[in-house]
Image 1 (cartoon, rainbow, N blue to C red):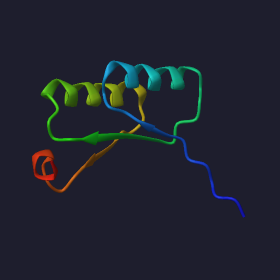
Image 2 (cartoon, one colour; image 1 turned 120 degrees about the vertical axis):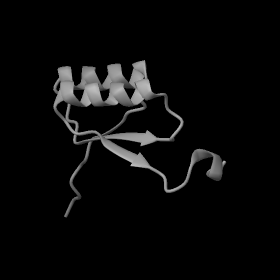
Image 3 (cartoon, rainbow, N blue to C red; image 1 turned 45 degrees about the vertical axis):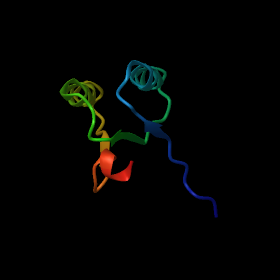
Image 4 (tube, one colour; image 1 turned 135 degrees about the vertical axis):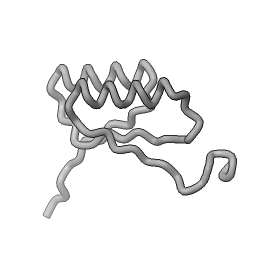
Length: 74
């Protein structure tokens, strides 16, 4: 019995990962999950960009955030 395949996009929110995601959707490539890993050090504009992108594509973006700050782990 084979496992189902999941197509996961890692989105940093920068120009390259945003363009990649938009192109994948434009080309109708499968996108099952979009993940944004929040370091807690992003500018407010990045969070606004992620929200706008999510509204534009109509697909939820999963936001992952660690229990502690970046500085704690560093």
